[in-house]
Image (cartoon, rainbow, N blue to C red):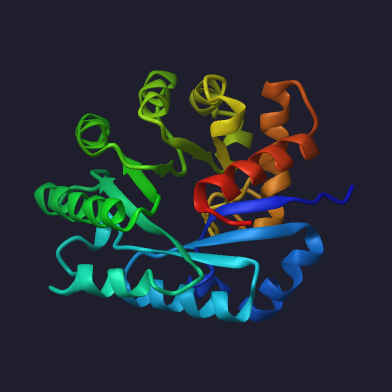
Length: 256
C-alpha cells in the first residue's frame, strides 16, 4: 500500500552513511509519501550542511544546534552563529540539544550550561527546540521545569511516568523505530499515555531502523512501520496515524 502525509521530524541526512547516494535518496523520498523532513543539527558545521540540503530539496527544513556530546568543543561565539542561522527561511527549530550521561567522561556541567544557553536562545527567538535525553532524567526534567521550552523530546526512551511529566510541561514526544522492537514494552507503555495531538514520528536516521530493517541503514520511507506500531496501540490504521502526526509536526514547527 502506498502511504502519504509522512513527516519525519528528526533525521540526519548529513551523516556519512548517506555519502554514496544522498542526493538520489532525497530526490526519491517524496515519491514514497514523505512531505516533510526536519534535519537535526549536532554541531555548527553539521547545522550548516543541513541548511544547504534544505536549499536543494524543498520538503526539507532544518534545526540548528549543538548536541550534548559536543559540549566543550563549540566555538566561543556559537550562540551568535546559531542566531544568525535562524534567519534562514528553512530553519524551524533549535536542536538537537539536550543531555547525555550514557558514557563516563562526559562533562555534565558543560552539557547543562550548553543546554540552558540554547534554551534561552530558543525562547528569545520564539523557536521550538528538539531535545535529546539519555540517562539523565532527574537533571533533564529539572531543567525543563525551569525553562518551560516549546518543542519535542525526540527518540523518547523514558517511562510512562516521565512521559506524563514531559506532556504536562506542554512538550511533544517523538518516537522512532524502537516502537517496533520486540523488547520495547517500556516505549509502548509510554506511547499509551501520549495524546494523539502530541505525538511525532521520526527515524533518527541513519539509526533506529524499525523491524524488519533493524540493524540496517534507516531512512524516512521506513516511518510507516513505526506508524504501524502506533496504530496497534491506538486501534486505528497506519494512514490515520501518519496524517495525525504530520499535522502535529506542522503545528509544532510552523510548517504549512
